[in-house]
Length: 498
Image (cartoon, rainbow, N blue to C red; front, top):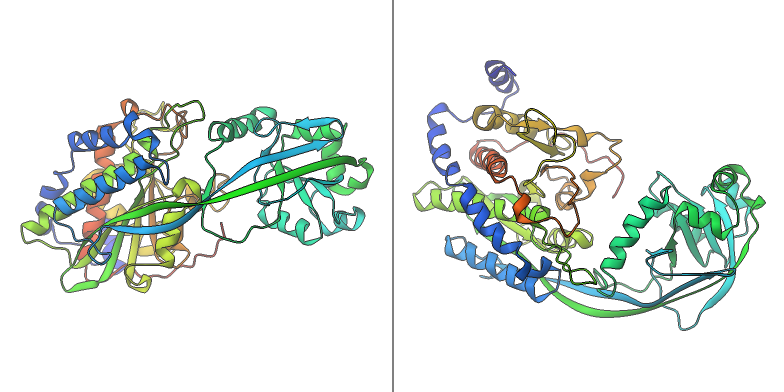
């Protein structure tokens, strides 16, 4: 890209760019973001001794205190009435007994099926398993689902609304196929099995009687004694042709309180201090497997967390030299991202600073690796950026200006596509800011073989590349924090809810 054309275009669009005289200042502090510091902190946070930093675990609390102590040491303020911790009220729901029997098939939890619903039953329910297939008004008119366990086919579509529609029609529960191929299902079942007994962590709510059992396409075919291809055809227009089966199921639920917290350090700005920039990551992970293997979470999201600490240290060093940002900055490490973006959702509902004063959220989730798309590329100096022009056309331009001026990374926007099957825009903590119409930029390195595996370890981190990515984010934050006009909100978050 031609640098002079970019500068001219940015100025024509009314973006007040920092003068060249300012550049040496931010370069000086960007250079304090180093491979050595990143490696030292990540080696600690993602060590076996931290046991995967599971939400609510003792190790998660150790990690939270480590981050809080760090922010205090570098001179940031604790914005929660003097504290660096925001307590997040969570509960753990475990299902001690989940059973499902269809005909002569007694299914094994986390092997033949995965329980993804909710419910609590004092005794087993006996009913019929009927096949509905696609959830359409036409099929619902053909199949009596009232008080039945209902088999639905939801491959390649978002199923939450479909499940609600079936339950609202009077179903007793659901058996769902959401992907084809036994191998795909086995990967999910294996993860559920590895985390068995730990409970699902979330916000307290009333128990919803919504038994939902996910099975593979092969298993659904076996339960109805019908070949997969025949089931797929019947799912479209004639589900009533599939013979129903006798079924029995039961769910027993136990609920316990979980103590966890968001961690934050605050740097107050100068003349625009009431306007806030939030830099976020999630610092906890998923703990250990049922066999004791540690999910270290080095890339996911130890890499983002230590990047936030390095960026914070760079701004704190500038502040100590008398160079404070015009806008205030909140360095926010949230809990429970892996459990459903819980910590960021809690912050959005209980903000320490008014959301209407929040200018932008920069979210850093996995920035330490090279993914499948770039693993064989000649140039691997890349980062995916997601959502940067969704709500503000300014934000992407500011990012690109700082990248071409300082970093020269490949900025890959492919996951901004509205039809992105991965739906990454909805899958990290920035989304809880975006849904409140706060501009966001989510920095991400893509998926690799160690994603959500016990092999996500520090020795595989690309620290020099991680340093480049963290410096780019620092430069962009510095720019947004100090420019005269904040990025204008001229877009709409018009994608459907997560």
